[in-house]
Image 1 (tube, rainbow, N blue to C red):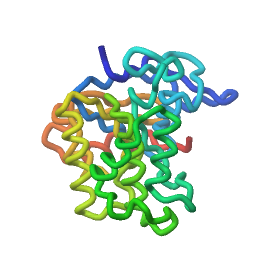
Image 2: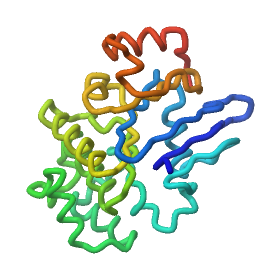
Image 3: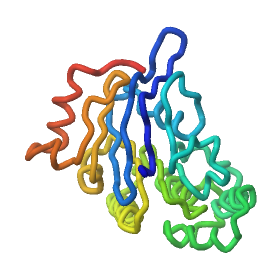
Image 4: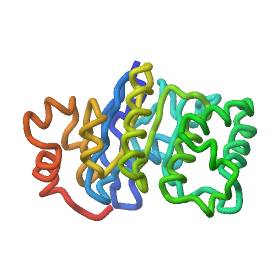
Length: 237
């Protein structure tokens, strides 16, 4: 069973289709890069998958169930969508403690994920003092808090320096190698090249490429492949 499966997904706002007939899957043990121009429909797809928006047609499931039907969603899927959503007056540790309490997760897990993302020494500082890269690390810690089998990440490398980007890549690769599934939306093509097993490219609300990265690029750079593919599909969404 795919860890993530999206079939015939359409999301409409009035007469405008933000996405239409989008279908793809993410298998356990794989990192899938989700690419597309700004406004192509990537964020809409992620929002429907995570229960933040309803589908007009089609289905989006995690481990075989819609997000809303998961009994303990945080233990199944972890998500990083907006690291800017952290409360500036709380410490990173307090932010994670609140999430852990709400999800019924033991407090010791907070210390574990802080160490995993390299934020244990800065955990008691207020979020307002964090750099964007530090906020991204706390966001990833929150995604990992429930020890999920699936990660859904939107631009996780934002604000990370080169060492941080390498660290992020190693975390995601280790997660997938352990049997987890990762759906990674990113504009940082160099990072996608180094970590993704498969690609899904969305243009104008539709899937325009889907398959193993090596099979799709076939000797081209990912940048050349992507820019050539999307040259005729850029739009505003």
